[in-house]
Length: 177
Image 1: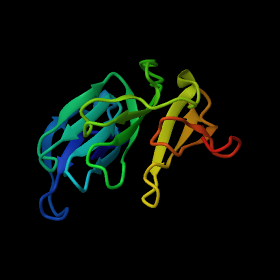
Image 2: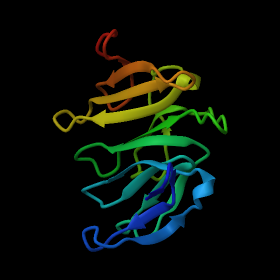
Image 3: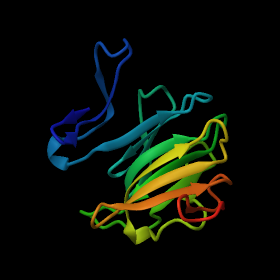
Image 4: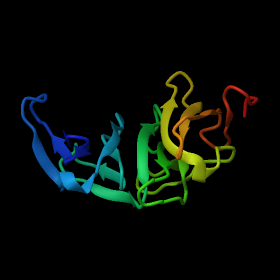
């Protein structure tokens, strides 16, 4: 839920959106905190939220949350279709705090508890600002990421992986990885 351009935290509805209640994740509007994406795993019910200060995880339908990744500006989260454990997040450079380690697509194989850098062939980490993901249901091993430049905002490109993120190549200019 947002107040102006900033977020107030994670709120939860149990009546199809008629009313909303705060969870254990809340922020004052002055903190400039925000969430970029939230997605649940239809197999396990685990929910992940990508935020300006890390990744949050809930195992009880969003009632309570635990921060599982810190120190980073996370923009997107996508579960691999049909997989209870594999999930991808994108981490971009934070222009305010200059977090620059492990930027790009990160992958978890333990249901979103821990994450590691995803494969080779991604753009240089220090150049990545905002990044968005797609994982195809028709071929769940095929992933796409679109990244923008951290300094100037234009597109760096769309990168594709055909092996669950082990290798990446420019989807327009490069060959199939």
